[in-house]
Length: 286
Image (cartoon, helix red, strand yellow):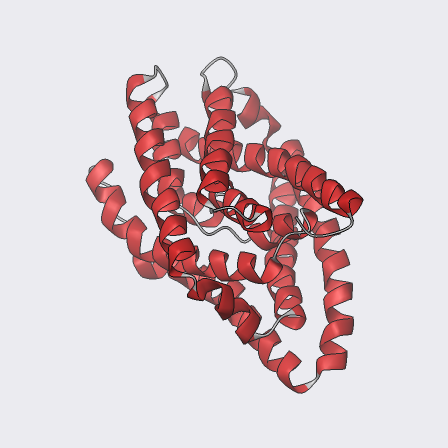
């Protein structure tokens, strides 16, 4: 039964990630994605908050707070793992700037591929991280579908607009199913962390990252929401890959990464939904 659940998670995960990238590409143009990232101030702040502020705070607290060693290790891995595929969908729920969300996600993914192999061996001695092993799934499951969809839109815009609407519905449903499957399949693993402090620290991790990103986003509310979500939602794919390669004999490392990712998904879906409802009520983007 567990094997079936894990297979379903893989299938719905692929549907969500690839479908989201195709939907974004069918909805946007290269110009709309690149234009917001020409704001060097935003770019620098996004990189600083994701790869400096969050890691320093999380590593510092994980060092002084009494947590199991494997829980600390999982937190540290995620502290550097930015650029999650869930970012554009969460920003869409918040009725935020999707073009900026896609551009920010891409920027963070590319930098994560560079930062993770450099920083993790320094803070976690003995860990080996292959840049290509991290980059490969991000390139083939995210950047390639996005690029193909952008190309299709440039030639067949009516088809792209219709496909984007269909895929948006499909990916939203797949995200809901994926969330349910995670809890159903990994409930025993999650329950095993009760009393270790992992869940409480995970919630702190998400809230702190959200607030740090939000206040680094400048004065515009839409931009603040994009950077807040982009900072709070870490890259589970990169985290699980690193845990699987380096800590196969320490399953709690992977479970910790899963718990943080689930906490962020649940909290950010709720917060993004509230932001979206507020924007709709106000009658204009905020």
